[in-house]
Length: 366
Image (cartoon, rainbow, N blue to C red; front, side, top):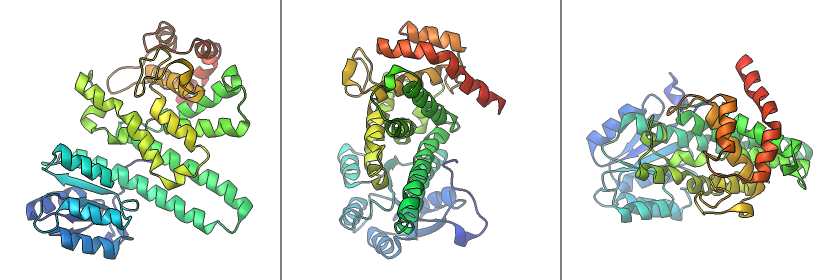
C-alpha cells in the first residue's frame, strides 16, 4: 500500500479537496497539482470556504487553506473549524507565504495538519498531502467497520484486532513509501521484536498477548517521519546539524500523531506504540533523544525496537548508503559505532542474530 492516491477516470469516484485562496493563480497551481487525484472545489475567501466545509464536511478529503485573505483569514477559519471539532475529521493544510513563528505556532495548536510555504514545490506538497489523506481515509474505513460489528461481540473482537492492525500497518507503510522504501522494513522490525521477546530472556514476565501488542506497536516507530520535509527525509548525503535537529523531531511528532488517532488510543497496543515512537532513539548511556533517558529508564520494548531498527538499517540499502554485510553490521553494533545498548540486550541479540538472517534470506527468495 502506498500513500499516493490512485488516479481514476471517473471524477465522481475521486475524493474531494477544497482549495481556499483569494488568489486565482494560486488556486490554479494547486488545482494543476491535485486534479489527477481529486475532484477540486474552490473558495475565493474564508467565509465561502467555511460555508463549504460546514456544508460538505463528509465529502472532503482535505482542505488547502491560505492565511492572508480579506475578511476572514485562514487562522480565523481554523478557529471556527476547531470549535466545530472538524479538524479531527478533515486534515487541513495551511499553504501560505506567511510562515512567521506566531502564525505557525497558533496553526499547530489549533490542529492544522501541516504548514506548507509558498511558492509550493509540486512533488513535495503532493506527497505531504496525499500521505496524510491516505491515513485519514484508513482511519475512517476502520471506524466505519468497527461500528457495523458492534452487535457481534465475539466476531467483533477478532475483526477489530485485524482491522486495527491493518490501520497501523497502513499508517506505517505510508511513511516507508514516502521515504522511498517498501513496507518490508516495518514488517522486519515487527518480526525481530517478536523473536527477541519470545526467544530470549528479554520477554521475561510478558504474556503472549502483551508480546503480540508490543510487536504490533513496533511497526509504528517511525510514523513521525510524516512531519519531516522530503528534502531532509530523502537526502542522499549527511544531514547538517540543523537538518539533524529537524529529523530528530520525528520521535516527538510520532508519539503526538498516535495520540491524536482515537482508534489508536483505544487499542491495547497504544501504550507501547506511544512509548516506542518517542523513545526508540534513546540510548543506554543517556546520549539519545528526545528525552535523554538512560539505562532502565528506557522500556525494554523501546530498547529492543531501537536495536532492531539499527540492525535492519545497517544491512539494508538506504538512499544515503549501501547495505552492510551482516557480520560487519554485528561488529559495528558490538563496538558501539551505532550508539550504546544495554549489555544484557546485546548478549541476547548476539545469541539469536544468526537466526535473524533467515528473515532476510527468506525475503530475498520470495
